[in-house]
Length: 191
Image 1: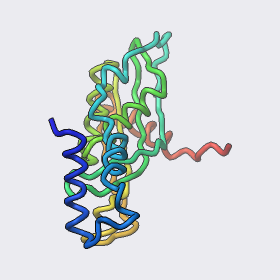
Image 2: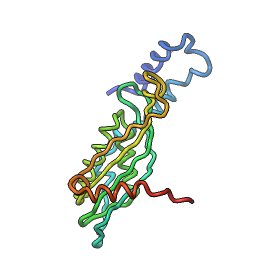
Image 3: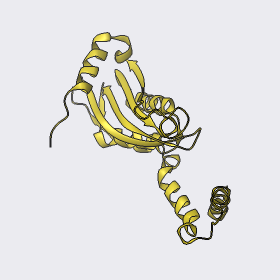
Image 4: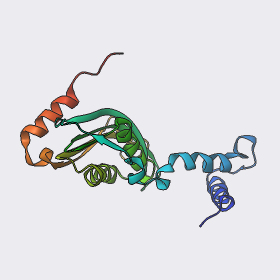
């Protein structure tokens, strides 16, 4: 295991690669600040899906779509260490158990707060819902803009990547998928 001091020294080395004067005032505490920020940005490594989805409730016969949409998420591309951000939509159709809606947001955050690719986040969230809730179906749709596309390389400022994972009835039954997509497209609630 790498110590905090070793991690800060590694950041110091990277700064020296970029900047001639790492002793200037604005950079003196940067290695410590970077490591502290990474502890928050990559907190998902210290969480487990079973802990996030730890409590469920009786569905009381409810068998319709449960959808939490338009959740913002932020992650870090594992290929370039560039940020990517977007919005996620998570849905499931319960059999016996439901979960508090904040748990769906926490599950998305858990997967996002790791060095990732968008496809893995999408699949991981869907896998965890299937495993821990055993629903009739689950669906995860993520839409994001990637720093590695916007700031470097092809420099496409408005490109949005969309990924989806459809399981159970959302995969097998087109009418369930159509209903879900109509619910996602519904106009936002004005507060």
